[in-house]
Image (tube, rainbow, N blue to C red; front, side):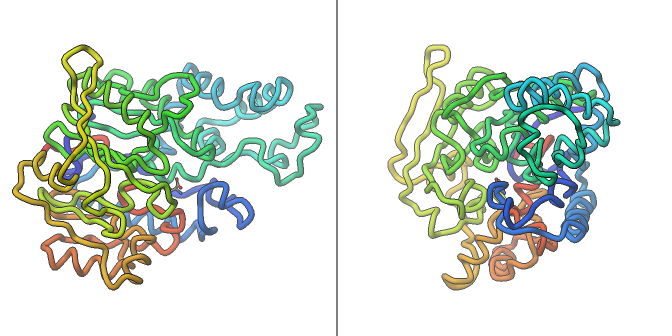
Amino acid sequence: MSRFYVGSEIGQLRKVLLHRPELSLRRLTPSNCEDLLFDDVLRVEEAGKEHDIFAQTLRENGVEVFLLHEVLAETLSSPEAKNWVLDRQISEYRFGPTLSVEVRSYLNGMNNVELASHLIGGITVAELNSECPSPVLQVMRETDFIVDPIPNHLFTRDTSCWIYGGVSVNPMAKPARKRETVHLRAIYKFHPLFKDADFEVYFGDEDRNFELSTLEGGDVLVIGKGAVLIGMSERTTPQGVELLARNLFKTGQANKVIALQLPKARSCMHLDTVMTHMDYDCFTVYPDIMRDDIPAWELTPGKAAGEICYTRIKDSFIKAIARTLEVPELRLIHTGGDAFEAEREQWNDANNVLTVRPGVVIGYERNVYTIKKMEAAGITVLPIPGEDLGRGRGGARCMSCPLERDDI
Ligand SMILES: NC(=[NH2+])NCCC[C@H](N)C(=O)O
């Protein structure tokens, strides 16, 4: 049986889930891209080639790569899984009773690969090509989406995140990303790889409105030694952190959460856009945001079941991480260049590198100033192109969801 376990941020990476750019990105236009959380439209063929280089770099470094579109299509080959997904994605409350029947029968007519493509890539009025009398349809144009595309599936890091022996299937903060979670829940519930595997599901696996309890994997760093570092950012709320922490402690999978307060801004929408872990004692940070004095708390299990103890960290979160990792102090590699270069490179995900084993990271080759500093500190950077891929505001770390990684 396959093993799913993520013991750290930097131990040898063994299995990872990626998503190759596809139909949903072809549907990005200047008029819809902002709502879909992209800053620009991109050349999808080029982005696909860049992504292939990313996947190949991982394979050459001993990592088994799973692709979301394939895994979702395989999941949908079970009639039970297909119904489960369609019940949630094509509800009467989204489409009205008449159109929901029509859309569902249209999707039911597809094979699993096409179905996965359209669940992710969306359906336009022209594609549905229906005479259905639904009032919803009457007021729409040919190019309008009946089912919206979900292009941010590209960032597999955020929708679900593995933490030690379990996974959180995350209630996403932005409406454009909420439907992604249904796909990940289905994969972990029904896909043969996961169905009989032994792991915990900490949070998010419920049909409910999570209200203010949102959490995204880009904010979660599994720093090792039973600890988890979480950013309370534009996307992750304290409520989400508490609910996750309660189950991490209840299942005994973690014994400490360090929670950091981050600004609520797009440039640092997730913790991993301003800080990632590269070697035992070494992190890359964007110093403008990751200042020593940002408010931080330590959450630990209380005595009573379900109780959490909160301690405000008095010195600094950097020191708290060093203590947790049992190293004398952290080496911090700042985003490269002068203030202008650093801001430009942070925006282009210079800090969002993916560590494949201690001291070896994958990052966008364009971030030359930051790479230079990392290399001077003894980090090996495996460069990948990201001229098109990077336009969704995500680098190697957030385009990957580790499924198996060694402890440190
Ligand atoms: N972990 C991350 N840094 N994820 C980046 C996600 C980018 C994506 N366009 C969004 O806005 O949601």
